[in-house]
Image 1: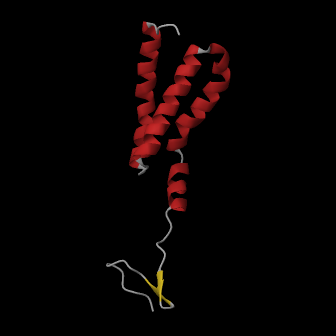
Image 2 (image 1 turned 90 degrees about the vertical axis):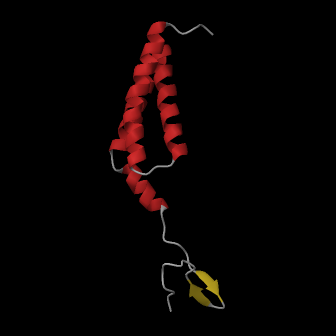
Image 3 (image 1 turned 30 degrees about the horizontal axis):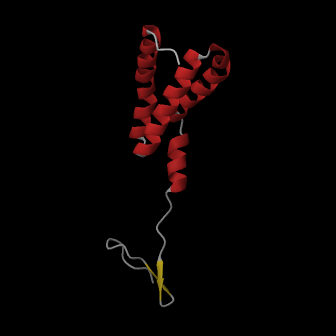
Amino acid sequence: MAPMGYLTLTLLFVLFLLALLPTRRLWVAGTGLEWRIGYLVTLLALGLASIEFEALGRYLLPLLLLLYLVPFSGIPARWERWRRRPPRDTIIEGRAIRLDADDPPRR
C-alpha cells in the first residue's frame, strides 16, 4: 500500500468538512449516534475510494452525490416516523392496561 500524498490528505480533509453538513442535518433530525457515525464513515470511504481509484469514480460519484443529498430530503424524518410506533398495552387478566405513569388507563 502506497503512502498517501499531501494532495490526497487535503482532499480527504475537505471531504470530511463537506460530509459534516449532512451529518449535522441528521443530528438535527434526531437520528441516533450510530447511524450518524456510519453515515459519515460511509461518505468518507466512498469519497476516498473515488479519489484513489479513478476508474471507479464514474460509478461512485453518483452514489456519493445521492447519499450526500438524502439527509436534506424528508426521507430520514419519514423513516423515524415509521419506526416510532405507539407503545403497546399490557394485557393483564384480559384487560388492556397501559403501564405509563403519565397516561390514564383505558377502559
